[in-house]
Amino acid sequence: FFIILIVLISVAVTNGGENGEVVKVLLTGPPTQPPTAPPTSTRENIYRNYFAEEVSELVYQESSPHYLAANWIMYEDPQQLEIDSPRLLQRYLLAFWYFHTSDLGKSPWISCNPPKSGENDTCTFLKFGRGEDNTIVYEEVPNKIRWLSSQHECGWEGAICGSGTTVVGIRSVGQNLTGTLPTEMRALPFLQALQVNYNLFTGTIPAVYANFKHLLALEVHGNLLTGEVPETFFNQDAKGLITFNVGDNTLSGTIDSRIGQLTDLKGLHIFNNFFSGPIPQEVANLEYLTYVRMSGNQFSGRLSSRFGSLRQLVEFQCSNNRISGMIPSEFGRLRRMTDLRIDSNKLSGTIPPELFDMTKTTYLL
Image (cartoon, rainbow, N blue to C red; front, side, top):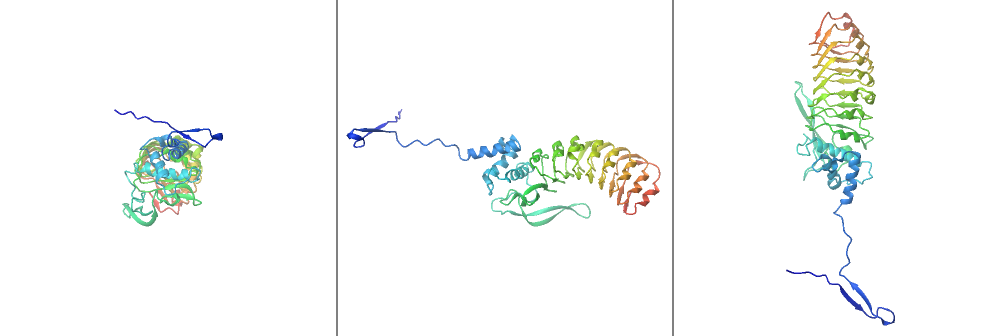
């Protein structure tokens, strides 16, 4: 075997000192360089720590959407935002949203996915709609901007921004988004609207969504959601909510009487679920209520006469339930009503003549 020896070489340099003495300089080969950390490790730690503090510590877990979003921000995003950029957090959260709702990119959306090799930032968006026979149709809308592209995140199709630079909503309808509704979106401080109807979301409605300070519209109808509506939606924290649409899921439970505290509510859409129990009379406290759609559930009990005080009401649909008793004559006061549907229940008695005072009604069943 061989033994490798590092030899210290002593070199005598004459004429280098005063009075001709010999000065010895000890050489040990090339100067030693200070140890270097792996490339970008310091930067990576700074970014991951920031995302962990603001969003979730899952950013350290490989193969999580949090981790992949951070990787994209640090290594793939053409914009390469600095850590102090006011846009960094929202851009990261939108990247996280994509990875979370596409099974880490393995189940792409119907349209406007991130650009692949050879593709540019533009896409043809397939806009969800309904045909005359209620079948699903998609309209091609060209020249939209892909997600996770080099463009400003406010330009990504479905990202809604206020003042052009701050994300205030996400609208992605009928795009085959999957997974659960992520609680991480609480980190978007100015989120006002989440419109993700007709997708493939599973699980429950996160209770934390009711605590979004600026939330005005939650539209998650037409998904595969289960469980009950969290109690947090029936207290003062959610009082700014204007549109609450959870219809066409498989939700259950009762409607809390505290719903009367949602004083700004205009649209209450809970149709085609498995809700049961009475319709709380406190609904009558919602003076701005305009649209009520609760058909296709298991509601029971009587219709409160107090509903006749909802002067802004345009639609009241509660067909296919188990409502009993008589139709309140007070409904005749609803002069703005255009659509009243209370068929397929267990109602009794006669139709109150006052209902014919609703002269704007075009659909009465």
